[in-house]
Length: 322
Image 1: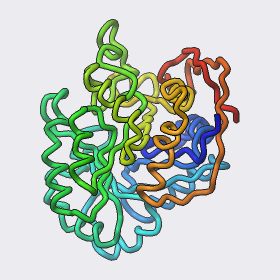
Image 2: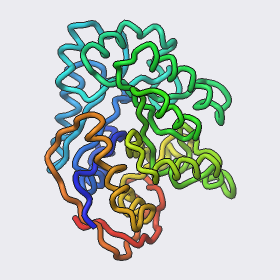
Image 3: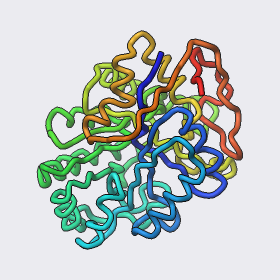
């Protein structure tokens, strides 16, 4: 099968040696990806943005990074300067995930920025969790999404890495809400994290949840809903940090083989989920890239640099042809 111009709408590449280790796996499978800004220091100004993009492009040969900046109190001049350089601005509630300590402490504190983003047509990307009980954090954030959607009806808002089924119901309620779904929230449940021996490599935020949530997300994705897009949230951490509890699943090496199995027999919906929905919803114009997937056994890598990937060592029925 041939997939046309796959796009990862949510990707962590880190910097330095980790970036060099992980980026080839994304470049092999995707034409472009939306790159997250939660580094240390965060990507939150033009100079930092251009420097980070340059580092990515030095490693990539055939790949387009769609850049995000970290939400803060931007002024009008800064936003106008950034507008042509970024895909979106990423909002993290303060302290909710990796390197988000400088995030937003109260949603209304950034309303002036959101007003300007709406005017300048800059999308908003959101890590939608509260600081409540870990299994309920996404569900508790639903009223925040609804308030944002009502208060800024012309602002395109992406609900990132949806892991709670009820959140997807908002897509048909508000025209300006969109969603990304990860490979791990699509295929796994909390049993894969803690049902037997603890598997720290599948610990992430938002946490992987119940079979009911997973099954509902799978039905939604297989329906071909035009506002649901693939965003891997592939988030590499060195083995020593994962064993200390760092949140993030490194899924980049296995994405297309795993999705080919999930969508087997339905290439049309696969194409929508991995590319067409994103390009249509956000007018993403990147050079066309054809990626061939063949039905041939392929084993996922056990280790990438110092990072253990999702499904390490698993044999898949499909293989990406470079």
